Length: 165
Image (tube, rainbow, N blue to C red; front, side, top):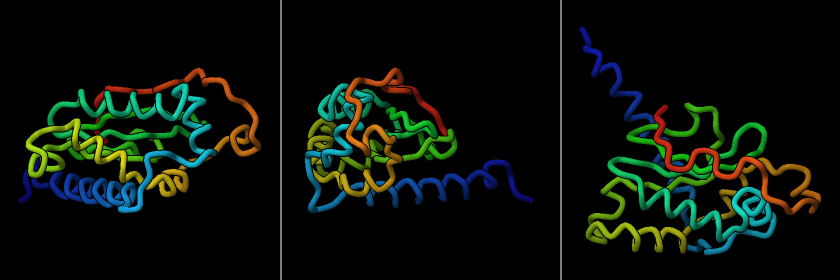
C-alpha cells in the first residue's frame, strides 16, 4: 500500500521536470537584454516600462526565500503579473499562462556563484530568450495594432505572493 507522501511524489517530480524544461526554453546563449518592441510595449502597459518589469521581477527573485520560482504570467484577460511559487508549484495550477520563469532554488546559483543571487540574476537577464517569451504571450489588439500606451489597472498581479499548484 502506498503512503500519502508516495502518492504526491510523482506530481512533484513531474512538476519540477516541467518547470525546468520551461525554464531552459526561457534561456538562450543568444539571449538578449531587451525584448522586441511589441513585447516591450505590452510590458510597459503593465509595469510602466520593460525596465520597470525587470526591476519588479528582479526584486521578487531577490526577496524569494527557500525553494522558489519567479514567473512572468498572463491571465486569460491578457493582464501580466509576477508570480512567486514555492517548491514544485507553477502558474498552470493557478490558471495563469507562464511566459518567463526564473529558477531561484539554491542549486541554480550556489554552485557557481556562492549564493550570490544578484550575480545569478544579472547573468539570467543576459540570456533571456525574449522570442520564446513573446511566443507564449497573448497580445491584446491594442498592442498588436500599435494603440494604447497607458499602464493597465492590473500592474503586477501577484508580486511576492507564494502559491503552489
